[in-house]
Image (cartoon, rainbow, N blue to C red; front, side, top):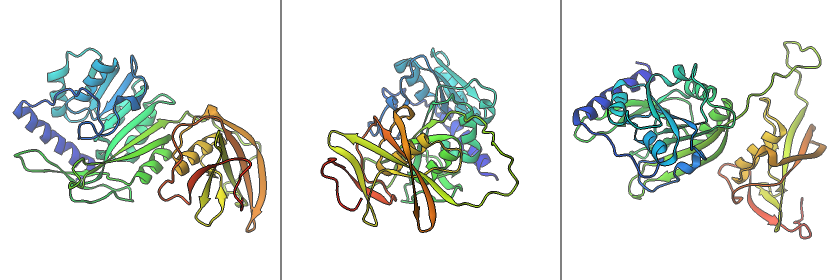
Length: 360
């Protein structure tokens, strides 16, 4: 049976069992992204949602959607594939102003829906093939809209995430009932970031939240992304053949951040000092977008396109390869620079301009 069909059946049975118990989870006082109360951020990661159209992907019993509508004044659409889960939401919360519940496949629904101002999925997007769900969600969001997703990272058995885009069996546990087998895409954070980037999002932060009981191995990850604007079709100034040109240059960016403490530099694992930066991706990425992405990946700092000022171009040669590097001044940012996992440059620090280290 295909993975998504397995999951559809599992959630249908889960909903039936909860309907038989007449159980509906209470509406939380605070929107949470983990199964544990008080762990992690709240609704503020969605931004100001008052009066805005918000999509709840896999809305289940509907209690999260109700919280956003009643506490934050959002206009929430809860999309749920399982008829029994949808019935739970409607039977309890159909009267709530600002909330509507739709029983449908999210990709099919978003193909014709008016774009939303934000979307979120609490523990549900891992049950959908990301190659199908992510492009559909992007198409269903307006440019610049946030997408907040919580997902399983490490399960009860201590199994961490996969580095391949493939589902694996996980169980839905319900007290006094046999566990329900599902197929989940439990993927490593870097893999989720790669997928989101591939389908037109910019990942702004990834957080891991372990279970409050240190003896329990479960870890939840929280992805904060934003839908990138549509790019205009580029028209070449000269005809192209079907054969790609031979690669002869590397194009990159270098981000210059100045504060009262000086300029931000990191140390490469080979010992040199470096600005935040790296190669421009061959996917139509602009220099500004490359600066934002590299800054986030290497230092954890977040900035906006309007905060990036392109300064000029450095041309040099390294090991026979022509390098073209565009320097950019970043005027404002959020966060504190920190060494990021799996990055070549770390130990970020501010250096006064009159006390720069040797070996630049």
